[in-house]
Each structure stands twice: as structure tokens, then as C-alpha cells.
Amino acid sequence: MDGYSCTIKITHNLVDRELVSPKVYLERGTTRTPPSYRIAAGYEDADKKIAIFDSDDKITKTDFVSSGSMSYDIGKSHLLIVVWNVVTHGTFLPGEGKNSFYFAVVKKKDIDWKTSLKTWYDYAQKQMNDASTTGRYVELINNASDASFNFTIHTHMTNDKNAQLSLIINDPRATSETTPTTRALATAIGMSALFTVMGSLSKMALRHLPTDTQSVVVTVQNDFVLTSLENPQWSLKQAIIFDSIPFEIPAQEERQMTFKVPFGYTGTKSIFGKTKHSAIFVSYRIKGTEQRLTFTIWWAKKLKLGSELNHYSVSLMRGSISPSLIQKILKNRGSTDGYVENVLAATQYLDYQCREDTFDIMQVVNGVQSKVEKIVRMAVTMGDSTASNMVVNIGERKGNKLDRKEPFFQACYEK
Image 1 (cartoon, rainbow, N blue to C red):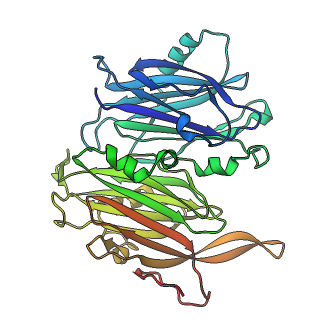
Image 2 (image 1 turned 180 degrees about the horizontal axis):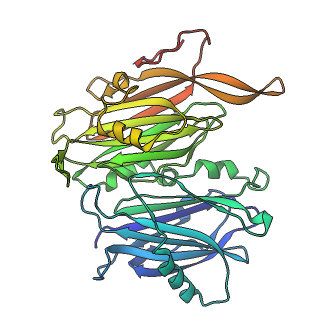
Image 3 (image 1 turned 60 degrees about the horizontal axis):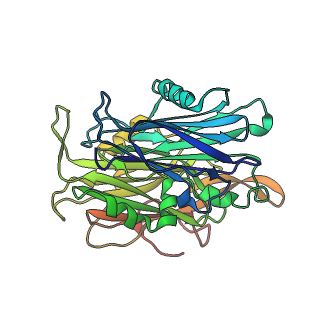
């Protein structure tokens, strides 16, 4: 099976511990890049902290083309276990196979490591997490008997033939003193940060996309001075995540993510025949609030440039977003209140369009924790190519707080 692979990247900020001495069991596939012997806390040399496993040409009874388990020692007493399956991919149909993954932190046992990894691989097959088109980061909170060994792991896997599996281990005790690169580690969450280190994400991503695929690279720019965007949720219709969605976008920084969609109309198993568009929905929680920045793309299945227009939007949504609402948004850009009058078309005329909203956040004012209302400005634009870039900019509005809020899109200007 030529062209299939799984890239695994692990970052952490563990205090007084490192990840060392990795071991790998391959049920299917080959090793291209062995995992690094030691993964220290921080994010220097990020391109050296990956392991890449390729497919092989063996014929098996499963649909897996790359599959196996890997472990890292965490200190002297525990192991990090990671299991992955990459399946054959043919179309963008909802019913096609899904990549899957499993991870756990377990106590070491006095057992041969080869037997242990094979046992964990077999056990995990009944516990796997799907890399589905609707998702969020999977969270594991480790509660070891040793209170100093508590930490959180966030994990996300893409459902592409060149899968990417990202694990981020966060130690709540970590500070800039215990881990000088703590902030750098936080900014690195998501495989897109890895590509930023290795080179331009958009160039890297688009160079490897199949010729029968359209793509969009989304750049999210966080202009808040102190507030980060975190905990993403997403849902896709007839589209695939090409590189992992970053878990956090720190204040005053930007992150990128790439999606790919098929050319032309795609046949489905539905009685309604062909699906005429792909759709992408992503939301980020504004840290310290219940508000979520959301952006949506409705991508027309056009066979030639200019035949149909792509559409897009950005908004602020309050509280949890129900799966039924998201599916309604993905299905029809004109069927959801709040989106009907706030949808833009990608044409040969390009400018940034802005809209504004408000949210409350707790801040220390004159030494007292107080609820403060913020006016947020969202600016967005998108190209009209079959390999487009979309830019979303969010930040606190400048100018007089008494200025009229602009809830609908209009040409951007500074007040």
C-alpha cells in the first residue's frame, strides 16, 4: 500500500521526568523514522521528536495498512502506551473506514517488553478512539497514587491516509522556572506547529496533497493581549483534516490548519444522490469564558474555477454548540438563524470583512476579581482558488466603548 503512513509526535512539560527508551511493536507496516530515545520537556528541535511508520505490501485479513503499539518510560515506574491503526482510504464518503488510536499511562510490570506491547496492542483494539470527522481532543487525566504524578494528556488523530497523531502531556506543576519552555510547549500543541518549525505549513501541506484534491489552509490570528483560544471542536462534511488542529492558539500568535476536499460532485450512499458541497466547521473556546469563536466554510464541488462560489463565515457563539445545530449549519448555509445574513462569498474581489460581538470575562480590576465586558472584533477573508487560504483574525476592538457595535459583516475600519 504505497503512500500510507502514521506520524506520531509527543510533547510534554513534565516536572522532574522525561520520556525515555521507546519500544515499538508493528502489527502492520514498517518504521521509517524511529522515535527519539529521549523526549525532554519543552519544544526545541520539534522535528526530531517524531516517529514515522509507513505501510507495507503485505496482504492481511485486516484493512490496516499501518498499525502497531509504542511505549515510552515515564520515570522509573510508569509507561506511556500509544496504539494506532491507519486504514485504507479511497473516497470522502461518510461510510469509509476511520483511522483510530488508543493511549494510556500504566504502571510497569516485570514482563518481557515484546510480550507487553503485543498484549497492549490486542487489548486496545476493543478500546480504540475513532479519528472521525466530528471531534475534539481526547483527554486523559492520570490520577496516580503519587500525587506529584498527576497530569493531563490531550490527543488528536487525523483521518487521512498520511495520518498524524499528536499527544500533549501537561503537568499542572510546570512553571517557567521548572520548564523554561513551558509557554513554547503550549504554543506547540497540534501538528501544524511542527510544520511551522520544519517550514511553511501551507507549502508543506499543499506540496503533498493529491492532484485530484482541493484544499484550504486556515490561518487563525489571535490578537488578544492576554487571552488564548483553546479546546477546539470540529465537524466536517465530505472533507478531511490534513494536519492536526492546534489545541491552543496563544495570545498574540497565529496557528494554521489544512483541510482537503474532493474535486467535483461526489456520489454518496444517500437516496438523494450526489452531494454538491463540502463543509467545515471549527470552534475555539475563548479561555476564561463560555464563548466560542466559530468559523465555517461551505466548499462548492466545482469542476472548474468560477463555476460555483465557495462561502464562509465567522461568529461568536455562546455556551455549548449542539451536534444537531452543527449538522444543520453544515448541510445548508441558508438554513440557520444567525448565519443567513452573515455568510460571505469568495470571489475575485477580496477584502477583509469585520463583525463585532461582546462577551464577559473575569479579570482583576483594582485588586478585585470582577466581570468585565469585552467587545470583540472578528475579521475574515478567503481566496477563491481551488487551493485557497482563509484568514480569521480575532481581538478586542480598539476605540471608544460607546461606539455602535457592528453585529453584521461590513468593510473593516479602525474606530
